[in-house]
Image (cartoon, rainbow, N blue to C red; front, side, top):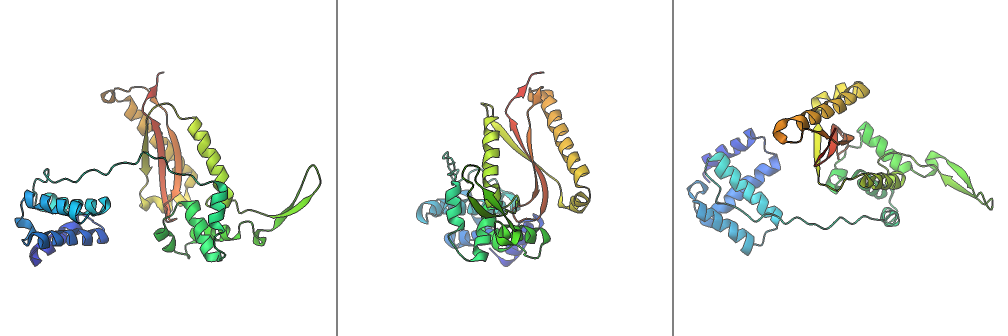
Length: 291
């Protein structure tokens, strides 16, 4: 790619608001295509591009995720930037696993959390499990953030002398045992594991024998300061707005539904990185109840 074409394509990606890492990956993909064919990328035809994709899949044996990044980069370059028809370029779709995820028992979770004696490492393991964070997200958390610090402190202090204790007495034999108090923080795996599993089991019993749709309604972050000052009023308004939107959609004759849909909603107020992110998850059956 000539320097001018590279600058122009890079500027195109910036205007498209592509993330910095993604932008570097896209530029690198086009460079590698040019090196393989020993020609400028804008001079290559669809057959030459397809030949390179086949080489990456069969000869280099790239993982599906790497092939997908490559294909997206070339699609962005040829279809988006150059305006070509990329309909002849394709990679096989990734096969979807039909195997259900394996759930750990409470004893297995406990053994993982007790695998290290280091308090910092144990706190990170508990936070990752309890909040569903990736390792990269956990190590990049800002410890000075007030809410994050509160969660970390609660998990570290859970069932230790820092929270005090109480005495358990057996109703039959009168035997006593001292127990430390729990933090009851909703992100703590020691406190919330059984509660979470009970809640999931209860919801599963309510499922109907049909397909379901998962919708997410997210509020823009610019509203966060306003929401934090008026939680009850604005979050109630979010529930009412989502309910009205879904009922209006179901009543539209073009969808041939025209009945009342069932909606299970769940409010999330944080993102996986523990920043304010107000959004509503909706589980909707693929059907409706007749009035």
